[in-house]
Length: 216
Image (cartoon, rainbow, N blue to C red; front, side):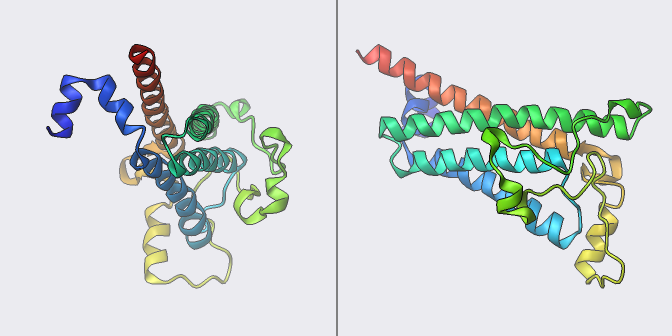
């Protein structure tokens, strides 16, 4: 029986079986790690798009989710590892939603007529649990940009190659999913990623719990 047929005939049991396998957990870890590496290596270091306070918080939340995926993927059938994976994944998604909502509000204020709406942007970040990530790894977690302004800031004297020139012009008015239409700013896209991830995690957790209860 195919996966689609399994899902149609017994959705809860099918999702419960899926979350007992490594695939979904690895996908979460790879996706979150990939977005953090892309933001740091490509947008920050290559295109000179400096991270703001909320941006580095978003990186932190994605790494928390990635850690949850890695831990659960060690052995998804191990209850302790699975619970740790769920806790970290759901926690990371929830705080990530908060950071994304705040960043979007700042973005709207900066590009609108409400300068007093720009709050929650500092160069001295305060990470959860008092983690001094900005001191441990400043290149990854030290805010160097202004919230709401995500256009490339090319240093004086920097020589850009053809690809850098293309993308710095492409994002000259800020990061958008479709820059020509100013559609989907960075905060909106990360918010969508968090909401989808949270919905999937909750569905996986609920199916696992319900299946376990019914089997008793």
